[in-house]
Image (cartoon, rainbow, N blue to C red):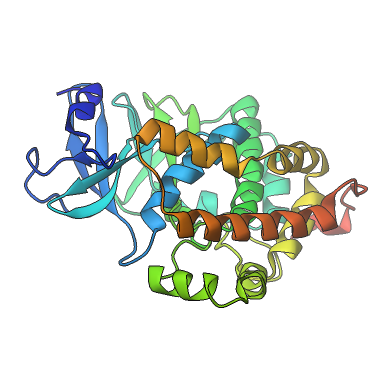
Length: 313
């Protein structure tokens, strides 16, 4: 069976029903098709989080990020998504957490140095990879990582960490690519559905959203020197300080993100209508976060880092 053949199993509610194809696949289990691999994943219990994978895919596309494409699915009555694997069959996945968890000054030093010999230790396979990495490839990784940090802060991704990214090595020639995965903990969609209904009907939803948005900061793959879970505005300020040009370019892309278009595209492509309260909730959250970031970073002066900033502690 090919990927396109799965459309034959989409029901009237927009879900691709894989119940008859696979015997109760486990969470995040791989299903091999002729032309691709897919993963079955349910969301957080009693929440809309699985829907957010679809929304983040559309927003990520708007920003030019290599996000994971997902489709609504269900298996034996359990709803979730199937996502297309970002690992091609001529690529190898490396779980190299150290590469993805340096602080921001360390990234500045790394990418402004000449990159030649690279040693990667896969923490899961317990295997060491040796090779070379071109300056061009290093710059591509830096650009993507800065864009991803800004994107995660805008969409309130509270669960971006090293395991939420993949390093891919094509044909083991060390043309390294970075792919963000697992985006369901964004836009405050991990809240229980009953809580979302309660908050929306409370008459205080804007105050509740404002409080939750302000205190939610992602587990960033590029960390601030201060603390990994500090205020998201401080993380963005430090990113701007060390990477002014990349920050300016990326923040402008983030300011142009269109949630309404993302929602409409999901409903059209998945042949479904998303729950009204879910759309209201994520819209409140997205608008609140974006407005706050715009207040702090719209038309600001970008400060070049000083030599003191770059000193190794």
